[in-house]
Length: 451
Image 1: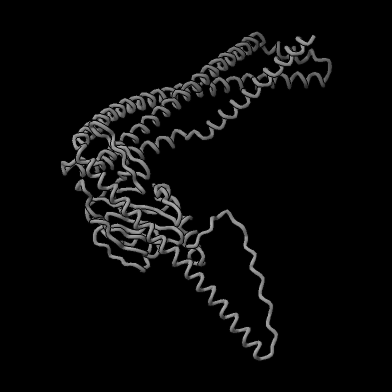
Image 2: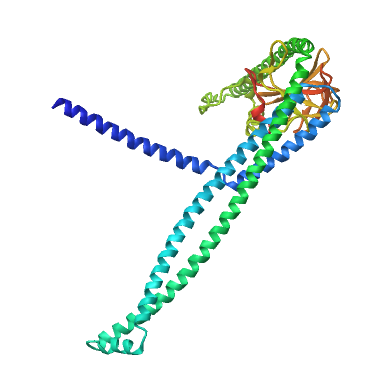
């Protein structure tokens, strides 16, 4: 008996699990259907990607004109490959959508053919019946054989309904036939659309293969300069550490200055209160009780000494509100080094380059602009690398590898204001770096700037 109960329990459990799996699968499928972009949206995205690819190709052609392979060229080719791969994925999805539409149309055509066959059969039966009872004698005989006036009315209504039925069937047959022809024409159009998409997919696949070979050529050129690159990035690492130390020193001074100002303001408030109370005592007037400490509302925001003033907090919040919308520091360029570790192909080993922000390859002498309004807190050199630090509440944007800075410490700058020109790096190309710091850490600036 116990065995039967156990068996029953297991069967019931398995059935419940199967039911739950079906529900979950259905929910996931419905969610995927909602998230799936439409065919028109896919085509728009594909066209936008192709336009962007052409822009990268033009930029790459300009870069290659100097006959000097750089990391920027590799990044451009990789970006082009990434976009081309996405184009192919979009086209594959589009082909799948067209095939799904074709399958649906096939089913509709099959249903229409069956419906049309049934309508023709019913119409044929009504014609045969009408032919057998076509004489006026049969018509009158059917009416006069009524049991009464009411029955005769019913028979006349029946005959009228029957005639209308035959007429409606003829109309239904015509409409169904027209719809069938329309569906067949639609199917032809979808076949053509699929052929065009498949042809475009093959074309994009061929382009992708060419771009992969192009990448291999650039990588090969970079690998041939492994020793030179190793020397360049070893020097960069030393320079990076010096810049980080200089930035930390500036932020430390800013914190100390903020704490000093807060203490001075508190001391001034206490002195003003004491002076006022002394005057009251001298005049024989009662001294008011000290006001209670204001109740501070607890928020998830981490406390910062750089936000002690109302102005500092407001600027920080405005900076945060523009996350993902900050402009690039240069009008035209490509990101060559991302935040964190970057891998650069070498002949004997892959070079690992650590970056505290973003490196933009651009034209030498290109204008460098502030990504947000703030106050310049430092302009300094590390070797030949000129650096500008701008404070935005508790945030700092740091611009490196500059030439001829046109701002100075204490100056207020606005978003998009030119602060310097792009310098030249050790590879002989224009470069600008962008770093984002708070009083406690260095942040990846990429999610903060526009795509």
